[in-house]
Image (cartoon, rainbow, N blue to C red; front, side, top):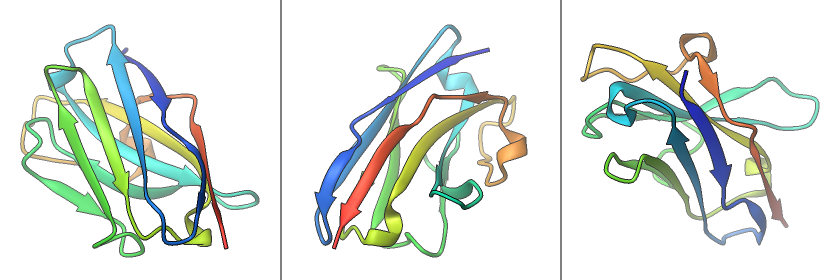
Length: 127
């Protein structure tokens, strides 16, 4: 299993930007497809963005398309989520997730497809 540690969360005003990071350790990072999910109080965990092993294929939830960008640096064992034009509805705990896969071209959008999770980082967007 790969170990994941998120960082970069915080409090930001609506319309602002924030970048969260997730550093992996323990396994070869390039062997993992990565994803970001979030969970607001009283709500289920939801998909935000995902990226394949190579970093050349990405997917986004409709609610964040055009505002969020997922990227990865395999040399630094890190995946990023750049969040722009933030809205109060983006508030929640953001989790990164990893799925070891031999398929380099695919990314995954369902939580049960991932087998390693970070502890989460809080993002709060004030109105």
